[in-house]
Amino acid sequence: MTQPRDPSWDRFADPDYLRSALLRIHQSDDGWRTDPEADELIRYAADRFAGLARKHGLEETDAMSVAFEAMRNPATRYGAADPWGVIVHAVATTFRAWQFAEEALCSVDTARRGGLSGCRAERMCERDQVPLDCDPAFTQADPEAPGGWDGPTVYQQARHVAGLLARNGWPFDSALLAVEVVLRKLADSGSRPSAYEALRRDRRWRCAAGIPAASWTGLLRLLLGAPSEAAAMTSTGKGLLLRLALDEDVETDPAVAAAIALIAPGGGRA
Image 1 (cartoon, rainbow, N blue to C red):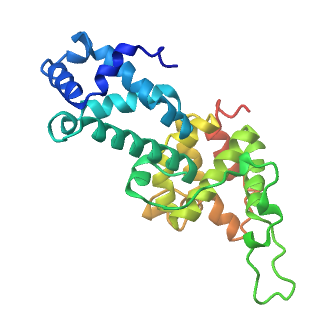
Image 2 (image 1 turned 45 degrees about the horizontal axis):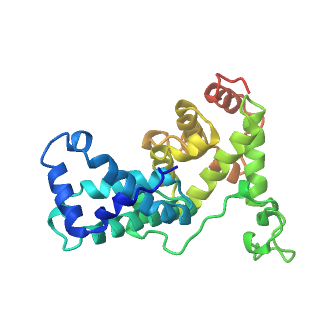
């Protein structure tokens, strides 16, 4: 929570005063720690942008950190006629990128570049009723079958894979969330190697599911296949999801059970 507003902070609203304060603070390598006005300026900026942070679903402390980074930018104190204009633009852009990245399940860098514009991802675990179970838009009809598609939905497949993981040492809820994330990223990426690399670098979903790093990497290899050309046509290279799509029997495969237990969080103990 921000500090109570001090009326004396209003002097920072003057662009010229702000510029002179920033120039003085940056004259010293340790100016943000030693300058008598530095702390007041940071608290003023946090107070100024706290409402905008709340609007984007962020914490008030985020306003402090983002505004601080904007004030450290040389362009703010040297290149702008109005330093506050630069800071406001930088803070608003960062907040929008953070919010969009959260909604679209993408990285902040992708959000800044405008990737997946207009897309808002809906997480299955956030819904009371999952539309994948009942909405025909999420099924694909077989043109050779007059009765249409009667196979499992995507959500049912996710629960099926999560159940297989749970029977071999994984907590079911963590496994279900992880499988849903992998399936969604796989659909967005269009290829197993791309989905593997994107999820391997993104720690948010591993942390959200409460999965240790080693288990997360092992799960990605298990589901999407080992990213190696030499193993491409082997069971390890194809991955569990592709093997299931090819109707291979993985339920009774002892190698699959052993691999799942080996990478389970807690050493195979649910």
